[in-house]
Amino acid sequence: MNKIKRIAVICSGGDSQGMNTCIKTIVNVCTVHNIEVYAFNRGYQGLIENDIIKLNNEMVENIGHLGGCFIKVARSKEFLEQEGKQKAFNNIYKNEIDGVILIGGNGSFHGALEFVKAGIPIIGIPGTIDNDLYYTDRTLGFDTAVNNAVKAIDNIKQTMLANSRGIVIRVMGRDCGAIALNVAVACNAHALSVKEVPKTIDQIIDDLKVCMNNGVESPLVILNDYIEYSVEDVQKAMEKNLRIETRGSTLGYIQRGGSPSVEDRLLATQFGLTAVELLINGKTDLAVGVRNRNIISISLMQALQIKEEFDYSLYNQLRDLHGLKKDNNNY
Ligand code: F6P
Image (cartoon, rainbow, N blue to C red):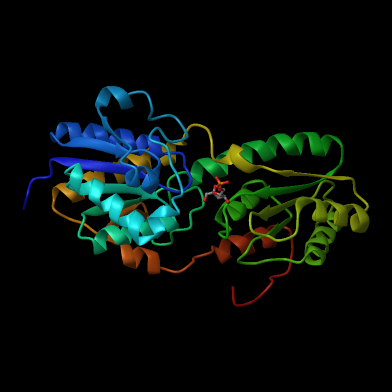
């Protein structure tokens, strides 16, 4: 087994809380093992453009508790083209990089498979607020994003309750309802519409009627990113059909910024350490993750093949809480 002398870190896709903690961990542990760490800024795009920097402990000392991404992220269209990939891999060879650690989401993991095909050692770390890589219980940033959304909704609820108003909130997550579901349970929402269990506006109104008959004054509705109707559409329907003044809010990037939670920091540290150890042990083509609190690694292809896992049991518990009937007995 050849000794690893130089690795590169790449963060790709949307940034997520915990990326900085993970970068810091990688630099710290590589320093201990006398391995040089480089970063390609701006994901695969920076790799194509050879936008490279050398990292050291001093540079990363004060980033572990910060949101955002110290080495920047990007979504690269050029990397999807053969020419772009070739430029990217040439820069790996030119800089004599022995192994790559990629931190990113679903799309970025597909990109990592290209490294495997090219024979470049690569380890993937799941970093996205969406929690849409299903081989792992958690992706970096998910816990913080949920906490950020919950804090924001707690504030919004106070003013809405004071005015006896209904509330409609849209949260992030792309086509994955994990953020919306966890936020809905944590905030005791009365109706939820996600891609996995989409509701028509009429169905939302029916659910809210049940809750209001049970004494709820300010019903709360949570929608996720990819629901096709708008916050305003639901707001108007509530005002018309429930005769309740209603306000709405799309939370947006407040969910993706801010300091990583303790859970994200712990995972980022464990993922970073594991990824470096795997490269040192000559391993490649692996995705690091967490299952039942154990750190695991499985092949990148396998990781991507594990299908969507929506937590229907939690979803049904939310409905039970408000005495709403089950949507579908198969759940
Ligand atoms: O994938 C992470 C995410 O924050 C999604 O939840 C959201 O839909 C999307 O990125 C927003 O992307 P952008 O930063 O390109 O606006």
